[in-house]
Length: 145
Image 1 (cartoon, rainbow, N blue to C red):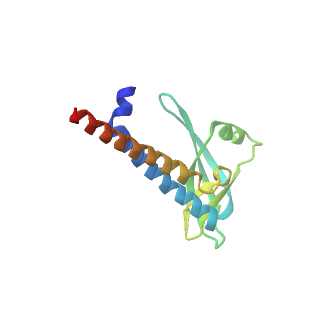
Image 2: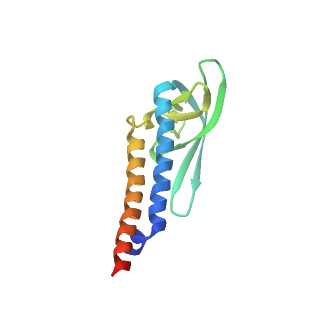
Image 3: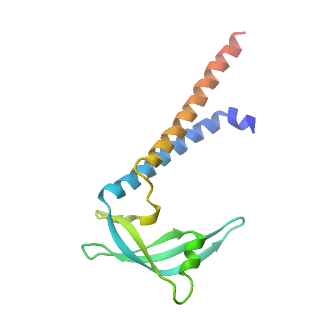
C-alpha cells in the first residue's frame, strides 16, 4: 500500500481524476444555472448483474419546454428501482436538462450543492501535485548525500 502512495503513477491518477471531477462539476453547475426541470416517465427498468455489484438502468422519456421528445437512459439506485417496481408504483422522475442540449440531464434529486464537485476535484489534483513535488524534493535530497 505504501508503495502505491509513493508511486508517481498514483499522483498522476489523482491529477487526472481531479480534472475529470472538475469537468463533470462544471456540467452540473451549468445544469443548475441554466437547466429546466421536466417530469420524466420511466418506461423500463433493467437490472444489470456484474461480478460484485448489481446496477439498475431506467429508460426514460420526457418532453422539453419547446416540445422536443427526449428518450434516454438513467442509472438508478437499488432503492429507487425497488420503489418503481410493481403495478402501483410511481413511475416518474424529475430531471433537469439543458435547453440547448436536452440529452444533457441529471435527476433533480442528485443535484449537489454549487461548487462541491469542483472543490473535490481541485483537492484531488492539488494532492497529486503535492505528492509529485514532495517526491521530487526528497528524491533530490537523497541523491545529494
